[in-house]
Length: 48
Image (cartoon, rainbow, N blue to C red; front, side):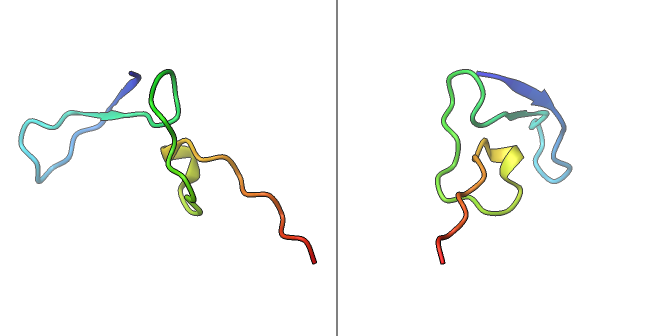
């Protein structure tokens, strides 16, 4: 599991975030926005 720093102000004790799609965690399927944070690859272009 790959962790990055970064606390959440309104959640006491939360000081780290998991990096999805790196090492042993899976990315999020069908993610369209903010893909890099969730380990989602860019979608293929739709055929016309």
